[in-house]
Length: 276
Image (cartoon, rainbow, N blue to C red; front, side, top):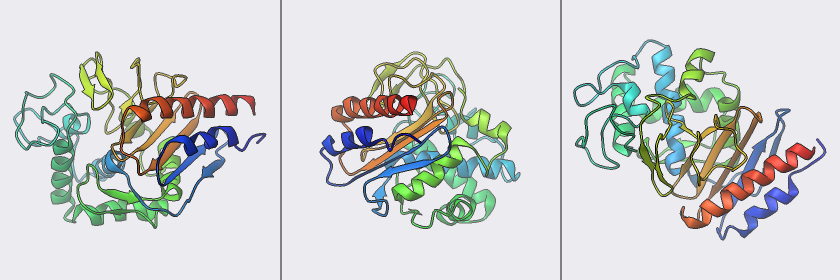
């Protein structure tokens, strides 16, 4: 590599966070990190990516099916993974019928985790460890609460998961493609803290960039870029066209600052790698 991404990583020092760490997996598969790689952060909604992976593993081993009904009539595991189940952000009752709008929902992810747990006969935090953390070597990661928001991890461990999202080992290729391409693709919806989009594409647990603008991902990201951000100031994206993974953890709550800083950081990463 002809770059250490020094210019890009220097931008993270301007984010105003007490603690921040970042990482990039470049086109060759080489990992670049910045900051304290052992500091544990709460991932917030980046946790949903890992919870989704757990659910998809349980689909592949035959414990559950994406077509299983979970919750209100007509709502399936697939609906819940794609935020199309009709459940509100943090409200146990449905607010709309399934498949009509993209309604971002912590409740839906908690429901699907409870369902998967019941079918595999294991507490969900244990199942996360057995199915994802242990196989990937994520020894510093732990679920300490809601499967929608309460996984705690380090940038070193997140790098291991980012590598899985870039080149899957735990899922079959067909499942991976389904997870990272739009489900119920034409639904409109809101990305909390970012804006309303029509359409608002989402995969199975993964937000998909599509034509969303302005957005928290890089302006140079391809439409097929997928990932997630978290309200604690965390994000992870995979750009399949650039073949690059980019991720960061901080302890500054998500806000307007991130909608400026994160795209700038991502664009800088892609620019530096393009010159390498």
